Image (cartoon, rainbow, N blue to C red; front, top):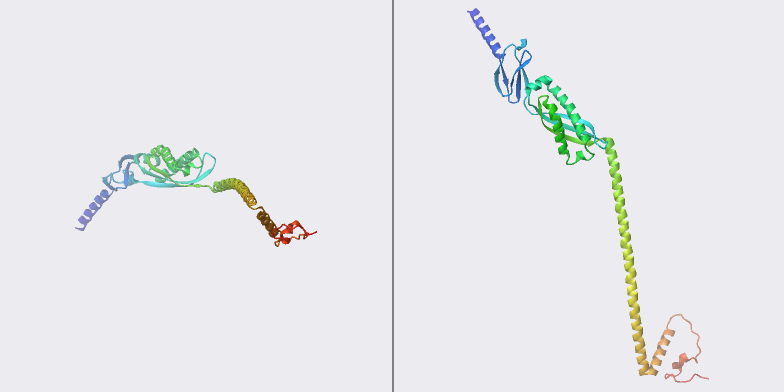
Length: 298
């Protein structure tokens, strides 16, 4: 009885072994390449349960699992030269997927590391070509988008030969090298200093123009004021002379008396002036006679 049970158990084990080695599972993020004696006989890129020949150790059917999702690899610190001779340090990355598993197996034996190594070399070359056709400011301007598309389009034919579809290429960082950064800083500093000096020169020129205009206006205002003052002074003198003439015509004796009193006041006020005159002078005739008619003493 025990011998029969052993035979049954052996048969079940053999069947289970054959069953285990005759099926494989592909999930939604994978695709499977079926290799029979080293040759590709089938590619399954739909998720599910599949059957194959057992005994992979005798190269009957081997299954190679390939990624069936978007993948990414980065390329860092690439030194590229622009058309003007200056250098940038560039970081970029590529988003891709394995679109043709059969070709991918034939090109790189299904090795993802080898495929990415080839893409890195081609991406490096494409970046250098695209940057080499551009000027210094292009990578920092709105032209950057078209540069990324151009790199992607140059990379796609080489990727197709590997069974890979390049979906996008992005330039993650574009920085000046230290040497170029220092040169750019010095150039920008010189430009700003020159611009500041130009602004100061224009300010000095403007100030000089305003100052000259103000000085001219001062001279014109003073001349106009002097002219008007001379006119008013002349008019005042004329009016004074007219009043004096009219007063003289009305009462000659009073006019003479008024003029003499005005002369006394002007001559005798505290001006610090010393006058030496004879008492018999005509200047003092009103001191001798209020009427001013008395003759001087003999």
